[in-house]
Length: 250
Length: 250
View 1 (cartoon, each protein chain N blue to C red):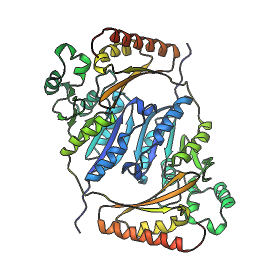
View 2: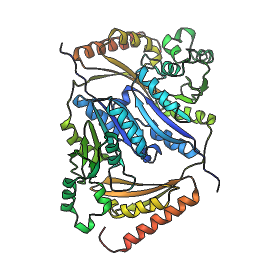
View 3: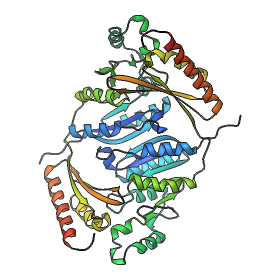
View 4: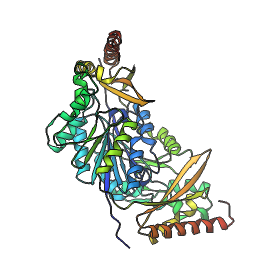
């Protein structure tokens, strides 16, 4: 049995619009699922407003603790796009216009249309690597273990495809979902707890959803060792079979 | 001009399933919008796994900094529901079965069906106030400035209706959205920045969305003084009219 390896990440969502509820974040779920599938485990996420000190503090807390940090939002051409400056501040690096990005923009814009606003999108901390943006050109960037991506989901997703090429990856989490259906959590909770205790190499979650006046439950077994996941899954299924076989109303 | 008052909140989303991407969080956006409308400003959010030390650390960071903290998730009957214990630990308070909740459960369950798993939902820090759950009975709770709600959206939403009754509220944020449509951010970014500078009593955001191969933009003006918001809105509209009137291709 080879030891499972862990590579960890955090997501930092930047933007007043998420905290006001105007925009419902769709990036965290996408990034979490995407990175999970390649063996990078998202362990924490934070959402902060467009306030430099807040971005800097969150970024420094996260980048020292996880292998990678993915930020989303705040890299456009308007005054409220302050992520590049905040990232520079967090790293103590000067921030300036990257000549590669200016050259890229001059392919698209005539010099008079390369407004100061658009030039803003070329600002990044010195030493950054560019992250390709096949949708609207203006790139994201990587500095140290921080990947700075756009907030618009389709652009973020395209950038993430490039960004992950630069990441180390660990063992991929193996996931098995078992439908408990209408069996109430309160009926299986004690037994499931004992199964969790007996299977310390996996984590077991129980997830209710509520629809049309009733709860439906799903039990999820996650772990990095396939054999341990299978074993716990079998125990959960046997438990549910036993409960269903009791003939008592659920 | 009366001074605007601010009441602040943070949201703490608890659950492995959010960080794995299995469940896409819908609670943050709902809470942010709901609290905003009653004059409580959500300033930060965090997502942490089902790990006690992580919940405790995040909760202590947030509860000392904001007027209120709303947590979601981890209050069900299974072993992975550890929020009550973590909250007790954060406050340094003993956690035990609340007799009011046990009594409530005995109205629903015959004593043999009041399993240890179900009794788990009666656990809360000593001195907690109950938060009513009209959907599935087992209540949330409030201790100090922390409101502990369920993770299932419909249950969380019902609990939030009760929870807010115990909150002080401040001035409600006034919000005006102006459609910039296909006018590119790069065209209006410089002027918008000057408008933002000239209107320090409001915050102005520019939000692109991308659909069918093109960007559409919306400019949002937010502030607590209605007159200041109207003034900034008028300036934004005048700016867009001027750009559109130029007759240059956008």
